[in-house]
Length: 159
Ligand code: SME
Image (cartoon, rainbow, N blue to C red; front, side, top):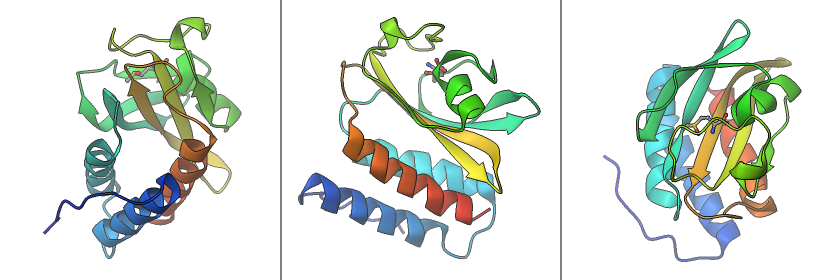
């Protein structure tokens, strides 16, 4: 059973803790969809000031909506389009302080102001992305990026 805990350390300590929780949640489970579903719920109760968190999974040259928490979202995003498609194409995290300034940004939830997208890479191929939206500008910084990349590494290792 999952017990809610208070994250009352430094930002780094809190991220270390949530990564430990992820490891415990996915331990011994190889179903990737189930693990992504729990990972999105885990991040949703951990991160403050977010309005969408979830995954898109690669299918050919497209990203297809996977497990998430938030409002219904667009289902298919071609590689190279929007923040998610750009992160997938370049195999590089996109940290966007103001989505309105990102050329081609896809507005799924009109409340979104800033966004971070971390690609999931397995054996050199993008298998999907983690996408997190915030209703405030400049929500994500290099600490979020570093630890969310670690978080994604743990998930990818489970596939
Ligand atoms: N804003 C994303 C689309 C996905 S939604 O935010 C959930 C993008 O530009 O790729």
